[in-house]
Image 1 (cartoon, one colour):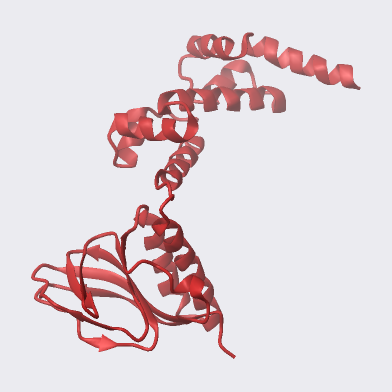
Image 2 (cartoon, one colour):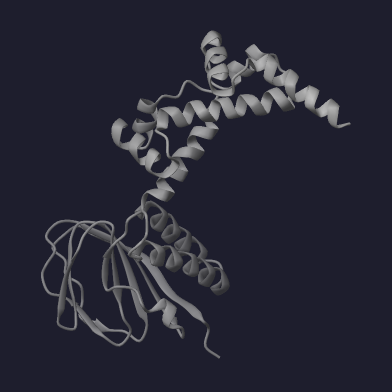
Amino acid sequence: MHKRLEYYLCGKFISEGNWSHMKRSMPVHEVILMLEGEMYIAEEEEQYVIRANDLLFLRAGRTHYGYQVSDAPVSFYWVHYDSIEEEFDQYPTHATIQVPSTANQLFKQLLHSSSFSPEEADAALLLLLKELERNTQAGYRPHNAIVDHICKWVDIHLHTDITVGKIAKTFNFNKDYISKMVKREKGIGLKTYILTERIRRAKQMLLNTNASVKEIAGQCGFSDYKLFLRMFKQYEGNTPTEYRNNLYSTQLNRL
């Protein structure tokens, strides 16, 4: 009985240059994720130039071959697999991966899992192929995953002296670009997002801890206590102490 999805082999290919892909036809599909350089490859009569972050899907039973030598270094991940379902053989032959970092990590996971058991390899392959499917869909929004990573990083580091500049440097983006990217997804710029999250955390701590207002200000990343008081009142309409007392009063009234 054929599996829905069956892993065969995977690896990472590295060439120092002066290389061309062999000519062959395989009984299974192959997916290639380009990491470095340019690969000149044809499937039947169609020729492609594959560059970093490009996906190449070579279908079972079709002949593929290098039509030109790659002079510079080349590296890519590859995986061979079979499937009885059309879902896993409908990828475009050539596409650019819009969020390559996740696909790279899943390829690494596949390389790791494949050394243990066929079941683990099949599961890791499924995750990889689903990610590639999302990346090649016409309506896919590439910034979603990146903004999620940024927001999670902000949440972890809220208690520190984080700035838009520091975050931009951490994620290798221009300050204006990263703020616009967050605004596109969250409706507010990165600087405002940081402040909003700090106030949100302060409200949680006022309700759920016995820490002093000044301690809470420091733990939420406000080095300037007076600035914290001013921003809190601007956002909530009352002081942190009033906010805390109002909440306690509300809870008592419900008893």
